[in-house]
Image (cartoon, rainbow, N blue to C red):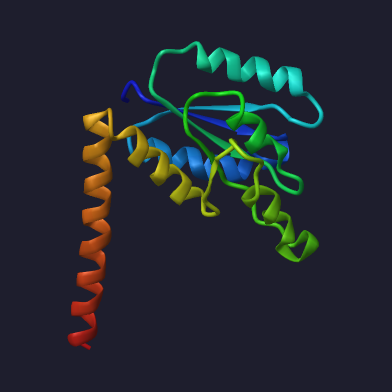
Length: 161
């Protein structure tokens, strides 16, 4: 593993399966991952203590927040830390999908990125951390090359049919 860290902060245990997908993809890039639970609505002091702990950790890091419905967690986290924050809300049929808007619109000065696919949230975090971690950058480049090779291979197989 590298020295770089992804902190996945979920709003409740119900988000664990979604977070596990992010963690698996992040570990595929060679990143250390910590998963924690803290709610901006129900346990703000606990969530803030979690963030303070990781802010004191000198390692390069990205926070990925996972909360649905009214996603205060992403804005709360972004306003409390100096590292990048990526919101990756779980898919929901509630409200016809309109609950994703709580992740998209933030107040002035609060700027988490929003990525809806768990593996892509891990990829964005790896690209960010790869700017200061050569091993992670190499893993991102290798991943992208494999993605490109698959497209070319699939195209070739179409010609051979």
